Image (cartoon, rainbow, N blue to C red; front, side, top):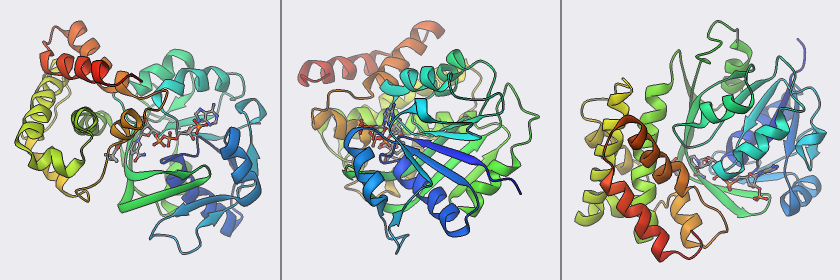
Length: 315
Ligand SMILES: NC(=O)C1=CN([C@@H]2O[C@H](COP(=O)(O)OP(=O)(O)OC[C@H]3O[C@@H](n4cnc5c(N)ncnc54)[C@H](OP(=O)(O)O)[C@@H]3O)[C@@H](O)[C@H]2O)C=CC1
Ligand SMILES: CC(C)(CO)C(=O)C(=O)O
């Protein structure tokens, strides 16, 4: 069988977890060519020491891919690209990717957000893009070293609505062989919005209070704030005929209870650690824009958006 060239862009929490599994499987079986694209210090560390994943799932916690590249320009004939960057880097990454992909390159974004497929499609009009969402609690411990906590990460991905008859069995097999917990759906839209309702509400509330997933489930105020945001997102989904479960809010809290209570969200970490960039626009900005477009009032999201902006100098 032909070896495939699989490229992972962004070796942070998500790329460092899912990309690690794909790379280590291919390394052990010599089954594919793997390239990691990392920048700055992350590039130096991975080039010299490989990528380290601290996780109860892996005794051997290092993987060395076939190639470590310091920029997307160096990517040659990729078959599959995992895009594992934060939303504020997405357009920059896609613009660079459009220069190196072939007609056959498949893109698998592993990101939060309800509009990721459309944003990639705006820049890359014809390739197969597999819409997805991921659940995993993992973060950069130090550059090139990723730490995973709690349950196994999960990937839910689906057919490209624009190219639904294309054969992507090899991608599904790759994910399966790499021992990634996954579901593959004909249509992954409901799953993407199910994740969005969870992460947008919990992300915004944990960011505002610098709290945790457990605190949003147990504090009366935080629970109420998250519920109000969820109601707005549910209405936005309804208007687009995305049939979220009737009891989605209750189910979302049940799902949240399955995380260790002290789990932070990535938005909370970024905002409260005063990083230069964060994904506030991916969550609050997107809800407000969808609301304006679809005629749905979003007062609770607007208010938390303003509060976070007013109280965090980095936003
Ligand atoms: N972490 C988590 O637990 C979860 C995160 N998500 C979502 O997944 C997405 C990715 O998040 P996460 O992995 O946490 O983000 P991280 O910030 O941990 O990692 C993103 C990485 O992408 C790198 N990067 C960005 N642009 C480029 C580029 N042009 N070339 C090479 N590397 C690049 C960044 O490099 P640098 O370090 O130099 O900035 C960074 O290392 C987000 O949408 C997030 O919301 C979803 C589920 C869980
Ligand atoms: C809550 C969590 C960890 C779940 O995957 C997440 O998606 C995030 O923090 O962005």
